[in-house]
Image (cartoon, rainbow, N blue to C red; front, top):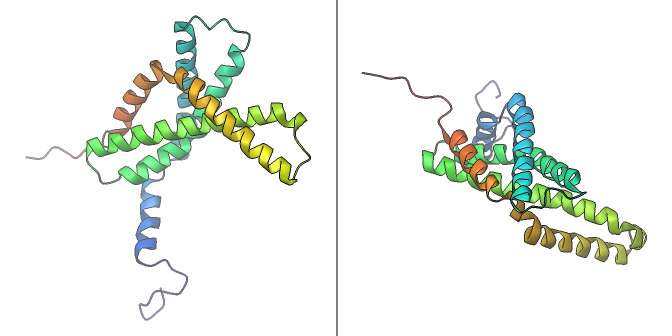
Length: 186
């Protein structure tokens, strides 16, 4: 602020200022982001292992690669999911907070895991693609990515069930609890 009380030209105004303040209030701490990401990744990997075990497919030679994919997908998704959910759930009732966490954790976890699957898929098919930067390469990159995301949605999302849904619901309930309970008054 300037000496006469006017806001300077570089200070955010109105909606932008409120949004920035809300982002600052709802930003998770670094410990929450780091340890939460590790734990969420482990839980998503455990959910995938549980689904594979129930389907009698846990003895595959690619088990470690599948579990690492789901672990990394969970680790990558957590910071984004937690940040977006907190931002959208601030000041809302418990059911809205639950819905925000449930939606964000579901969406970002699937997107992050599908993205990592697509990059691995792309890496495998890269040897048959045209040179980098050409028009053909762009088409091949886009369609390889789209095909891999489709394949993940059809086959990979199933590995989040049934344990991932339970983990998701419990985590969303836990996160939706008020962070600072009101003191008991008389």
